Image 1 (cartoon, one colour):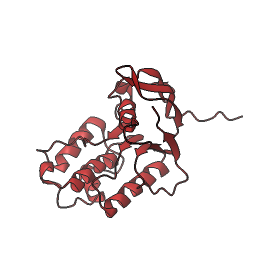
Image 2 (tube, one colour; image 1 turned 60 degrees about the vertical axis):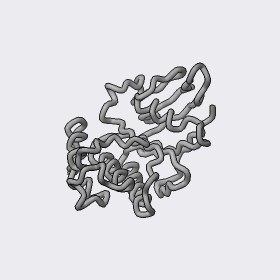
Image 3 (cartoon, helix red, strand yellow; image 1 turned 120 degrees about the horizontal axis):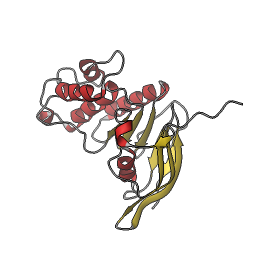
Amino acid sequence: MTAAPLPLLEARALSFLRQDEPVFGPLHFQLHAGELALVEGDNGSGKTTLMRVLAGLLHIDEGELHWRGTPLVRDTSQGEIVFLGHQLGLKGDLSPLENLRIAAGLHGCRNGMDAAKALREVGLSGYEDEPVRQLSAGQKKRAALARLLLVPATLWLLDEPYANLDRHGIALVNRLLETHIGGGGAALVTSHGAVSFHGGEPQRIRMHA
């Protein structure tokens, strides 16, 4: 009998507290390679907090969190997990090209991908050398999305990735997700309904305090 594949990410009774009051939890879920999970819940239900916990930016208070079968430690998962949140992680005085080259220097590049190609893929041809602070909100989001294409991360944590994007940008995010999931990657996404995924029914993680 073939053993079940090991999940990439697993949460067991995961909870987060603020001043001894629960922000969310307990949560139980598994995410395997090739899977997309939608994190659902009302405003204030802890969706962003969950993403920051999974990214290693906040410590868990209760429960367990495992990456590839061992306790999740930010240092050991560095480069395998990428987080795109409301703060895009871009240096405003640098250009999109310079920002991506820094990311590549830290985490490497996917096979066949470089910073210039990633920017072309997200529709930023002609803006590669503009300071990020001079770009529109949508263009900044596209520059951040280019980082997803560039670095060889397995798990994408995307907190409201459709914000500040027009319909073409929304379609771009959905294409990126489909390609990533289809190639054996995994993703957790918070969204208010813009996800259109044709690779099967996504897993749904319902937030509750």
